[in-house]
Amino acid sequence: MDYERIKRDANDILAGLSCECSYIEYKASASQLAKILKTICAYGNNYYDNDIQYIFLGVEEVNDENNKAIPKLPILGIEEGNLEKCKNEINSLRPLLYPNVAFEIIMNRFKSKNYLLIVVQRQTGGPFMVSERVEGNKRINLKPGRYVRIESDTRLARVDEEYDLLRKFANFHFSSLTNADAVIDDLNVDLIREYFSQTSDREIMDSLDKTQMAKLLGLLDRNDPNEKKIRNFAVLMFADRPEKFIRYSYVEMIVDMFGTKRKMESKCFKGPIWKQYYAIVNYINDNYLNTIVVREEGEANNRKIVNFPYVAVEELVANAIVHNNYENGKPIQIYVSDKQINIVNYNRPLPPLKVQDLNERTFFNERDTENPEIRDMFKDLGIIESFGTGIGEAKRALEENGSPSLFYKIFEITDNITSVVIPVNEEYMEIKNDANPKKKQELRVKPKKLSK
Image 1 (cartoon, rainbow, N blue to C red):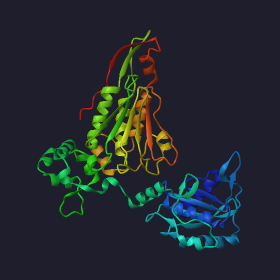
Image 2: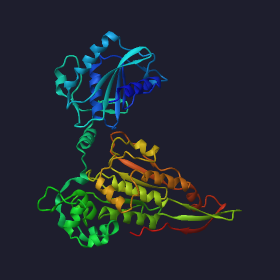
Image 3: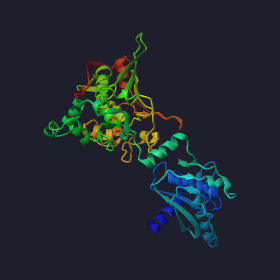
Image 4: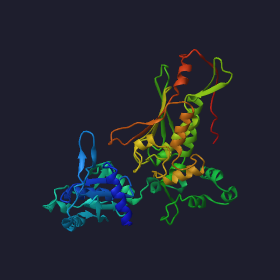
């Protein structure tokens, strides 16, 4: 640990009047043991996967109408004669955390005032909890349990957040687990060969039998001496009917029939998930994507406007399939109308990403995935070009088309849902509905159909 750098960074936080957040907490006194203990626990669990997290002791926070949770300057500080005593008080909390959270207590100085800095770096071996021993501790009035830091709020984890923590520290991925019912005989060898033909040397592929190809792709349970049991991603990629073994591993499309007598229509896309992707994108392209070529009065050149950019559709459909939680008991749903395409997953982005990040950013180099093997296979197939760029590509396609920006709906924090909307191009709708007589519709064409 680079103590001098940490001290400089901490003083920069104070000088910059940084607000409390997922990695900054201010406490006026080291006597606030319950609050300090639960924050250390939450920092150990590190829900947003921060590199480093700080608790400032001897720093009051401002909470008036204009400023919230920023450090009050000059800082209150801690008398030099009390620094060691305060440090010992904090160290006495270590046995109340299980497993042990590794943290450092550093003495620092800011503009002639001393303060203590509790530093918690990224941990392994969690999730962490405040042990039941606090219930018999007269100094601390705190409920035992696993605590998380959500933005600037430290609280007991909800059930879904505890599950996130368990997955995080166990590096758990449902797609990597062995399926309880499926065996290698349930995989379609022609699908495996087709995958190989698109991603590998065909001469090598032709010389392998089904088991050899399955082993090469990591489809088998490595602990099965009979080489029969297969992993969940193998079922999703190469079984003819994945939904037979993993319920709801399909995509449901609900279509607004655009003013016809039949108000809604539903269609399910089943089969291997990479085949689902091609079928969905081609179906939307064939039936609901249109390009209008228009000529402005007085202008010689024609101009193309699409209702929904093809690139945005293919990137976001791929994103939904790759990041879907296939154990949650709900299918991906796609709602199509003349005004928008809405793609819904019934799971949130994995921490540290939040839905707000998906609206605000275009690149996600730190993004974890529910299904790492599926992500890698989709990349090998060319369905995704590089990791963390699909949303950015979709946003750029809408911008280049002059469309409103795509947006992810913001739900209550307890709602386990990710819902992205591709809005229709407003100029396209004007022309289609003859709302702008100065523009003449010359021709309609469709984007290129996906061939695979």
